[in-house]
Length: 221
Image (tube, rainbow, N blue to C red; front, side, top):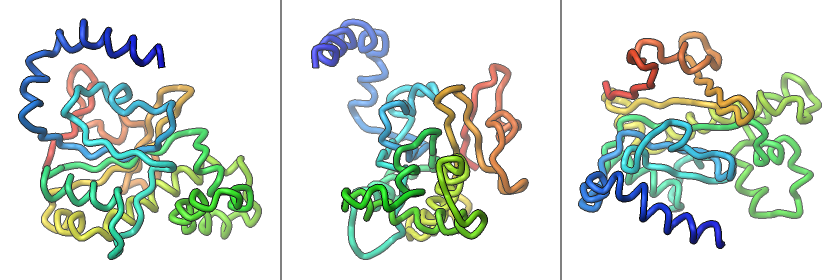
């Protein structure tokens, strides 16, 4: 806790002062364009990875960057998605998985997490991704972790489309979905290309949206 307390003090003296005008603006409301759904893993920092400032990302985090399919049972993810899309008028939703994901390891080997009933129940939202890999390889282990991570991102994108607020915006081309995977060791981000049906380096996937400084611009349609 000492490090956290010291950090808050340092933030107030430096970063807050540097961006005081921005924080004064944000005190009156938020208008992010991107809902960023990623894992709760401590090694993932969405704002660091995307080099964004406060107010630019609406962030939702949980074990495995999971989006439960829409149902009549309200949950934190469902409510957050509905609010982001219907109230904040989000233009983009990114689901970002990552390498060495403990949740994906658990999803690959459900018998290993039987002693964690809530985790097991949560990771059942990844079952279809594991089923696809099982059909291909029969016996699964951690050598399939990368594929499981990618398949899970694609599955959660499909789950997103079951949410009425998301489906409505997609129907009128006012919302775009993105599937990403972040490599902790290299800093590389790969993105799913619908055209090529595979994950590509971010610079290839969004080549037409890069400015002269090679900064990714996620502009609405």
